[in-house]
Image (cartoon, rainbow, N blue to C red):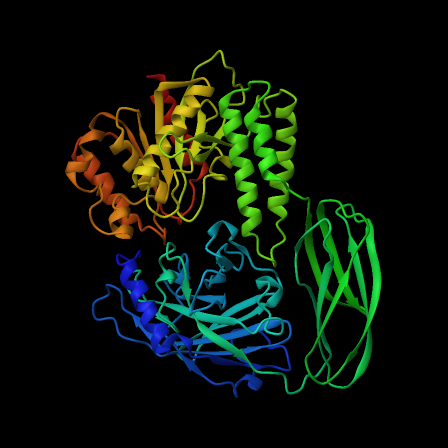
Length: 629
């Protein structure tokens, strides 16, 4: 459900800010007990204010009526509590219920200068009969990066129940799962709630606390929310101590700073033990601090330095008696001089291939950019790993060796664009038996939305006889429909042909989800390059749905003419809740009616996911037949 009017959305947001409508605050009550999560609110919670969803979305469902849906919120020192109640005949279980019904999304945001923010957790909850369902409780989006999506810990609980004509949903979200959003450490927080109510014919209506197009449109740069005011504890049945690091990524000369919050029913003295270990479990700091607890929230900052820290991952543990009050990983980074690093690469004293030079320059730029963008509450573990790998590759290069020679597992390369001189990445995977003396067919595979190409080739995309390449295409949300995307795909192919033994006469284009539309779009742009097209869980008219009118619709005959002489492979899950199967089936009918050869696999039990083993077997055979022609 992409918006067609980003400018109008921006204007609407500015009106909200000026009018103050988005700046009202909502108080969240303190709970001096931990609720039981079973789908039914505890008796002690009935005093909480019942809140309503302010906005209703019927979408294209003619005659859809509004249902009464309410929610309650509270918090404890360790968790955020949420209860949603909806009038219903039953609970509907669907794939990605948080969009397709019944299910919901919770946005927790860091307040910035206005009512919009690009720092947040967008957390999805989908009721499911299978408690291990992958999207049952999951961080869906984090700071505009869906690739960070992950399951919530076992300390976050979610249950649903149905009785007395109401569907009920109850969660207890661990603050540790949404660092740094603990109300005692930050008073600049906000939230939004979106509830998707299932209706007939696999459709859904929607309800939100605040209007926010980003609920559905992953390209919206900033999210809207309502500010939260957390009630100060009036009493607490037990002592609460919470310790956290103010900075989870530091340089070798920096101190570790501890932020300690305390609350107690009565005044008492406590000893806090602090231990820091390196990644081999060796203790590098072991000390104690003393503090006095009182019947109010207290704040204490303490700094520590340990001797001669080396770059790496460290483990911080804080305990009070037998209780762990803080446990974090943090990273110590080395000092960087990226100008010097780039100078060493461009000198290229051993005159190694320009593809290797371009790749190293791209990686140096990426590490520098990501280090600059790293938040204080992020460890940067993956970035440190990325730097260590880059450092190893750089040292090999400086000794006159090509660090990428002989690699058959997926790895990232880059080319220098002839259009704007920028370094653009792609991921490549060579066949296990790769030899420069042999020509290999080339499979170009396009990634889905909200992601880059780095993990696309981690599973088999061919039977092992193809060189596989996944371009980034400067695209996360635009369906590979821009000039830059199409140029990047061609340049990535040209770079592969220049440095690897790929056969330019045996190339196939494929893609998943947004990349499925992208495969159709890319073939339409350059039919002379490819011998076949494979669409996995794609949508033949996605660009017009997402970006507005004026883009190729592959359900129209005029756009199918270039496909008349090539085979097409189409896979889709009948339970796909992201891109419904009806469009794929319509594409199959249109292709066949135009005399185009189609191999189809519509799987009744599959959702929006990659193919089953049998489909892959048939697909690999399809690839091989094309390559043998």
